[in-house]
Image (cartoon, rainbow, N blue to C red; front, side, top):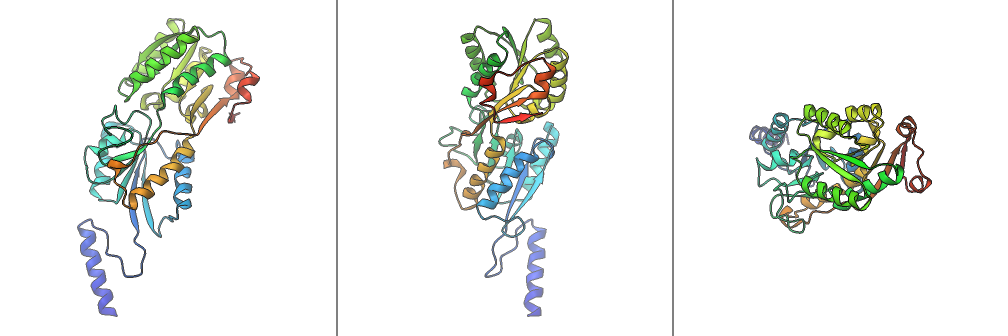
Length: 328
């Protein structure tokens, strides 16, 4: 017995030195290895991550028993994202789960390790999939961008503040699919008799300049696309909007939590919970190339009442009855 244990320990050491998983003992459950790469801080998305954990638990996964997930947060710059992706790929996990633009830096390094992504932009536009129905590579998952949401956000903002005539859209021009969102915004606003000015902001200095230009142009409302630039500046945007009495509408719940007026968005916790089904399918042998990418199906309207009061706004009853979450 001692000899077998010694041999097993020696083999395990040799495999570990090569970055390989140990050979399971007969009767033992194989522990699958996954890495989660997030483009934001853990605090920022802790509610979303609980959705993933709940989803994995529902499917019979217990971390430490039949799966390990190495959570790595805050890939906010290209350099940090590239290093996070390189470290993840070097570890040769069974799959890599990515949030935000880390799908790009990871996919650039491996075409064999399956990647399950939850992505705010357009995966096809971003070159990560050939189509939603048939991705064709090693990336599949959930695409959060749904163009009908863009128009709905503007409709809700106009319903809350009927006096709005000029909207400013703040968005990164590097976000895949942004041109479709911009066009959808202009079309939706036109139907409501509202003009739209688009401000392309690639970084925080351009964000500051864009906000100042919007105010100078007589803007009376802000539309924030959910991308890395506006996300990183969400607290600053909220403070600026408050200073200039500008109602805002955005595409992720964390914007309203940071002080934005309203958000109409996919249920992020629900989307992360559903992401667990992709992890399960891939671990059971599904090929990402033929596993269709899905769009969100559950949405929520979030109103920051503290911000509304500070702006002197009374939320119409027609909006309140549709509100899913109120932030006080």
